[in-house]
Amino acid sequence: MEENYEIANLQFDSLRNITDKIDRKYLLTGLKSKNKIGKNDEIIQILSTQNENMLREICASEFLSNFEICNSIPKEKVENENLQNELIKMYVDDQAVRNNLMQNIIDKYNIDTTEITKDGGVEVDERNRNRLKEIIGEFGFPTKKLVGKDAIQGVFFIIQHSDGDKEWQKSQLPNIERTVENGDLEGQKYAYLYDRIKINSGEKQFYGTQFSNVDPVNKTVELADTENVEDLDKRRMKIGMMPIGMYKKYMLKNL
Image (tube, rainbow, N blue to C red; front, side, top):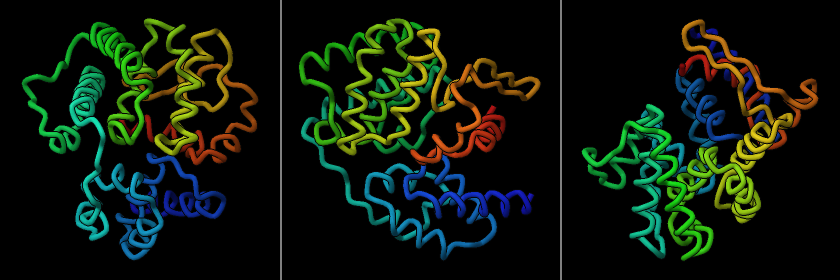
């Protein structure tokens, strides 16, 4: 097992030598591998180079909770706290129906667990989508300044899971692109939505984020149709996403 962490650490360091734009999941995977092999000094150095937004996201992980830098992040200020809380609740429901109970978010925003919807994915997606349409109509597309980073993550996932209205989902891609350009969302999120829209349109994906078959019983995953697979890792690494082979292993581990 330690050998696996050593390999993961080497792969992580190789990516860091190529780009400073690293996907949050891969960043956490790399930091965890360093934690497992006792390279805490390197973890501290890496954490010190992250911006406040990234620290807010990754420091929620339990293995980073004892690092001083993670305990010194100031509370995020937003213009509309009520809207933030509503979007966070929608985000929690979106993930709960997919068996991802985000305890760190629940604790952070003091969400009443008895009010979380854990069943009825299609109904939750439709309800969230319709409400988000109303919010965009009233406030414009949400920004980090308006509702905070966590709520923006929720907005993304609601759009990503809006397969019930593919035209509206597609219409939101420019909004997600602008949100990325403004620094309110990771560039990888654009890749996920771009690929999903392509697959939903019967076209090939570009970044390798979508899978045609995920089999938790036999522990296998298969990529959906992908453009120019030979250069896929190059495209992924340009925007800080982990190599597709490692991403498949990450998925299998979490099935």
